[in-house]
Image (cartoon, rainbow, N blue to C red; front, top):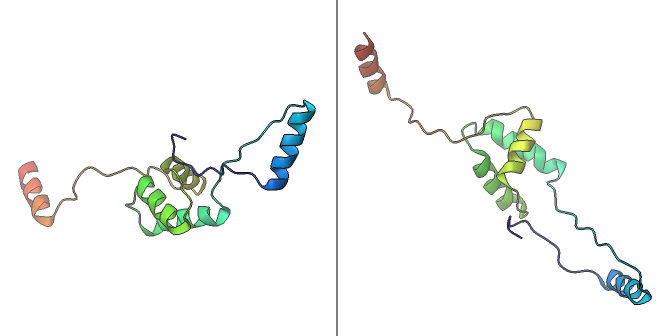
Length: 111
């Protein structure tokens, strides 16, 4: 898998036996893969963490949540969950906040 999501690659003995039996009978078998989605408790944690630390990016929140829960979660999933919680524009800030000395110099320059 290219996106590093966790995937269960094994079946229990009962399910494996049923699939083998159906294949021996000549019937077709469809296996449905269900991806792990974050739980509602994880959604609350994501929104709470974003509210506590306003400057965190979606990637940082995703890394923190992955470490806390042990389940991988992408930054895009975090962005969707934050959007659902009413929080937007989680992107890295590139500019450096101005110090008081910088503000004074810029004010003098403007005048």
